[in-house]
Length: 186
Image (cartoon, rainbow, N blue to C red):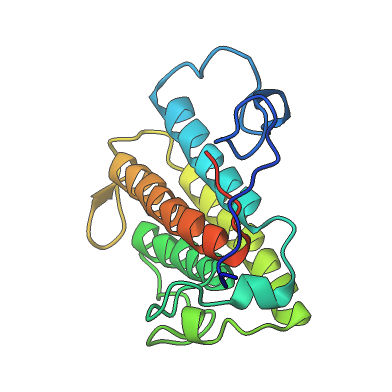
């Protein structure tokens, strides 16, 4: 018998989907957003939701499992990494002293992702708090062409970079989750 889990999905309409379209929290059935900022926000929200979906239903050990050796990446590490990255993006926006790292330097977001329930709960709380703080900071800059921070990065570029970061890590989360319990999907 193989040590690898069998592939599975909750979907019944389309066997290669994570959930049925009617149950997908990313699909409202409403027309797409109007305008550039709303579109960027919608894509970011979709990827954030996707990441959380990939972590749903797993215990602390499964979330912390480094399931694609030799990588140190785990689903819990991704949650912690993205909280750290959200905080770092605020450093790009402001002209003040940089915010301290949440987990330390040198890959501590991944290396410190261990199978402890309290650590998992803290990672979710950190991610939610850091996302809200970065969203609030960017909301203060409605002009997407405005250049912010010491490096003069355009708000638009920062927003696209955030989408890119979440999209890449959702791809990682797909592979990590499939190795944990075989679950695959969109």
